Image (cartoon, rainbow, N blue to C red; front, side):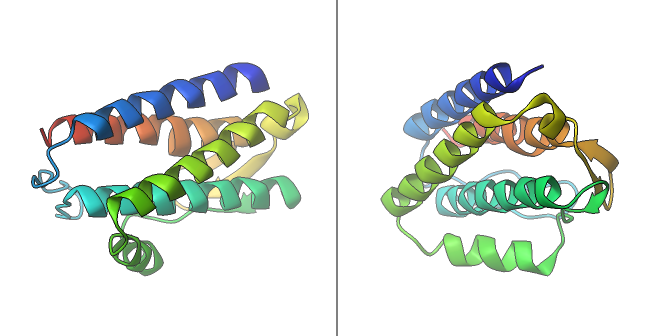
Length: 156
């Protein structure tokens, strides 16, 4: 795909996410997650997005620094994920939005500078197996933001 196209997809997904946040009813909660049963209000959802953007940015950098087939990632039920979501959700919505903005900007900037060789570097996810950096960014960054935009739209 290329670095510029990947960064543009991230920009678009982030814009879609921000538009959904602007329309959300802050007093609503999500439907329970089919896998974990988690049910989130706006603060929890924003807390998750904040921590997931930071987490996956660091994981991509780790794969880039080590590879090939560097172990990376976590599962939905990973205790450190749940703890970070809970901690993040204690921040105010404006604080969370600021964190999300900064972490998304860092992710977009990284996408812009990746070389073809870096985009094709591989890591090994515990559930999904071998993935390129491009696939990691697409699945755990871009597509994840889109999923949460749809989730936020259900909170109206």
